[in-house]
Image 1 (cartoon, helix red, strand yellow):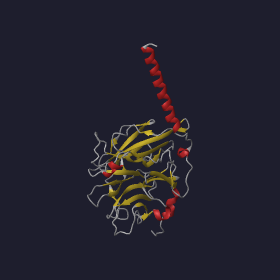
Image 2: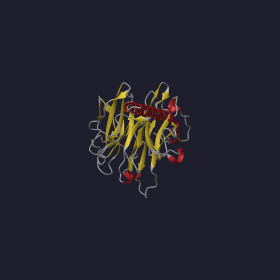
Image 3: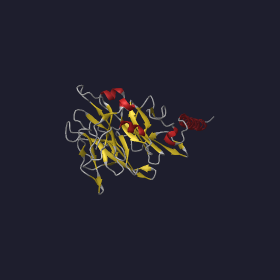
Image 4: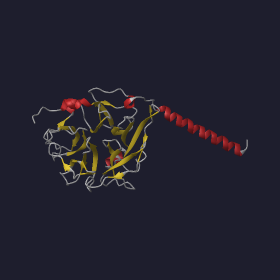
Length: 317
């Protein structure tokens, strides 16, 4: 056999092996059809979402959203090693899967994710913008504050990232955007110095955001850190996380909820774990608002969204 024949034969074998490998990789991902990646919906007891498919043992998954049509699913993965976490170095990137020809595709990294950290994803009320927090510097500045960014829907793809202008972003850093139906944004910010950061909101009026307002002591008590907020679309309740609580305060870290009263004030925050088992943060409703998704212990959980009704206190206006 000539050298040319041997080379051609090797190239054919190499190509065939790679083709078979790709086919094997695809076949290892299960065929998923139907709403919610074909998963059986939960009841009032929180369950891990898509175990072994989305929530896996070898990755740290968190913060997930569906597109408004329910045909795309986005979620964040942490790729930080234990050693990096010990140094306070965390790297997050965005994964997505969508329905093609009636079947959910194998999850892949979003094209605008990978160079810089991306976390805390949320959709605008019309579904045309995907918001997130990131440094978006090149090279990535892990020591710097995060800012809020968005990508715009362009057909079936997304635009390049755009940084939000002040007064939303500040030198102190902003994270965890979440929206009401009328476009009001709730988010976390370090502005104001130590003890004055926490959860803020900004109304969208005449094509721009108003000066952010820090929420009151029922949400931001001042003695601990607050964040990971999720505002319900009708602005009736706020889910968020508390941590760094002093031992002298008889409260636990974890997920909290507060309900908005008719006079615009908010009820005292209540720990969700004792009555419902909800523990974690970065909550979001499914596209149809039937299920509440949230992150806990390195996995994504979901539960019937009516579970929040069990937490609503009896109070007089």
